[in-house]
Image 1 (tube, rainbow, N blue to C red):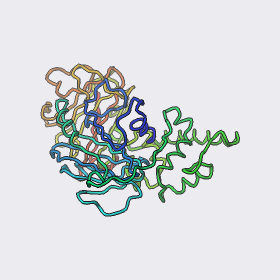
Image 2 (cartoon, rainbow, N blue to C red; image 1 turned 180 degrees about the horizontal axis):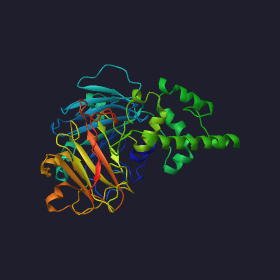
Image 3 (cartoon, rainbow, N blue to C red; image 1 turned 30 degrees about the vertical axis):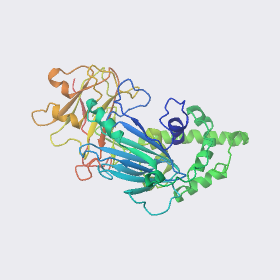
Length: 425
C-alpha cells in the first residue's frame, strides 16, 4: 500500500494523484468541501504539505519557520514500514524555527552544525506529512504564507557543500489497485529490497523465504504446482478475513464512539503484524494517539444508526467538559454512505474549538451542537452542524490531547469520554 501511494504521488506523473518528485515539497493549501472526492473522510482542519524523500545518497533537512503559538502544526515522519518514526511540530519540538535532519537507515555520524535534531528512518524511501491548522475558511491565506516558508533540501545544500554522487537509478514497477492484488508477491519482492530487515521481522522474512519470497528472489505463483497455488490463495483469503475482523475490533466503544490507538513506531507494534495490517487497512498513515486521537461514530448513544432523514440529534458538552486538548478539537460531518463532506446551505462541514466564541451557550454553561439536515433556526444556526438526508458518519479530531486527567489517553481507557449523541425528535 505504501509503495502504491509513493508511486502515484511521486513517480507516475500521469497518475492523477501526482504531487512532486522525490525530495521536493508540495503544498495543498485549500479548504476541502463536498466537491473534493479523491480521499474519503477528508480533513478540513489542517491543509497538507507532502514530501517524499529518497535518502539513499544523503540525508534531507526540513526547515520550519517560527509559527504563532496559537496555531498547531505537525510533521509526521513515516517510513516504508508505515511506522511513525518521529514528529516535528507543536507537541514534539515546539513552535519555534528549526532545522531537522532526516537520514536513511544506514546513516551514522555526529549531528551536523545548525541541525536541531536528527531522525533516522527505517527505510531509504520515507515521507513527511505536514499539517498546518486552519482556523476558518478566511484563514487560508495565512496558512499558505506559512506553507511557503517550509523548506526541504539535501544536507549538502544546507551545509553549502558539494553534493555526493547520485544514488543508482531504480526502475520502479508500475502499480495500481488491480495489479497490487494480482501481483502482490512481485511487489513484495521489490519492496523488501528497499527496506532493511530488523530483529522484529526476521521470523516473518524467514517464513516468506521458505516459499521463495524475498529481496533477492523473483516469486511467481504460476511456477508452483496447482496444489500449492490453491493453498496460497486460500491463505490469502483467510488473511484478508482476519485483517477485516481485526479492523472491526480495533479500539473501544464508549458512549457510541469508537476510540482506538492503532498507529506508532516500531516499538509500538513490536512485531504485531496483524495490528499493523489492520491499521493500514483502516486508514494508512494515521497519527500516534499522543499527536491526535480520533473518536468516530455511526450510531447514537443507544447504538441506533445515525440517520439525518429520520431524526434530529444533539451533541452536548457539559460546562468544563469540552475535549481536553493542548491544540484544538473538531467534529466533522460526513455522508454515511460515501464518507465524503456534504453539500449544505451554509457551507459548513465541521464545528471546531476556534468557533466556540461565536457559538450560543446554554443557561448552565454547556454547549450543544445541533446535528440535523435543516436549520434549527436563526438563533441556533451558530451551533448547527448540517447533516445529510440519510446515514451519518461523524469524526471527532482531538489534536495534541492532554495527558493529565481529564484525558482521552490512553485511547479507550482515558478519564474523559466523548458525550453521547442524543435523539432530539
